[in-house]
Length: 222
Image (cartoon, rainbow, N blue to C red; front, side, top):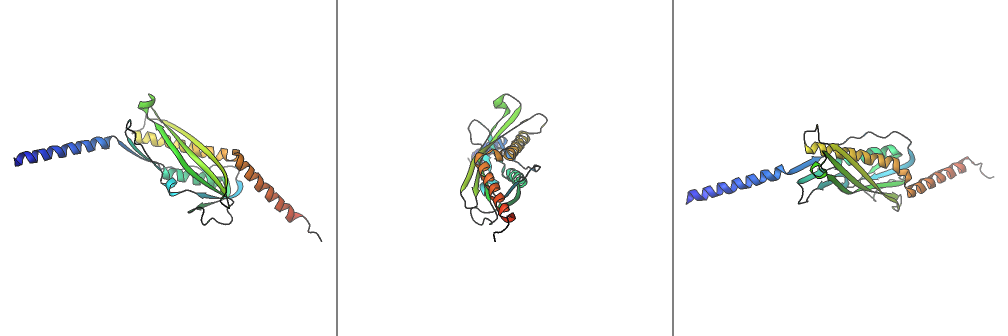
């Protein structure tokens, strides 16, 4: 009787170990690390605060669909590097804000706050093509120095990569995400001044600066 109890316990332990191995084999973890070149071009004459929340800097997507294997995808560090690099190259002065709306420096004219709306991806077995595809959507928000919303717009980014010549699915998906992030950076850089509300804000700043310059240069009335 004692022998059978030991035998049953060993059998149950083996089943648990086997199931754990199966689950582990179907689980994928992707940690995206990205360094992105700074765009070179005209800088807008603004002093801008950049606020990246902790959720943004640690963003992790977790796949919980019953139709797919388990995926855990962390893009936080990569997108933090991307947005700080791109926004830092767009304006004459940028300040990284650790809190918002608290402790905003007096010289900051505009605060930009990005948020991740969604991340989606497709796998080769779903598309019947040997590539991974990734879509990332960001909600972009801009506020003036008093905390009033100036503009709200959306950036949609896309990336894809073949799995051929890559060692793993994780590598293929990481590459696709990095391509999507570069696409997001390019869209942010080239599209900022096309947002109507931001156009109006920039025009107002230019008019205000021109008026101040005119007053300084004009002779004082006696």
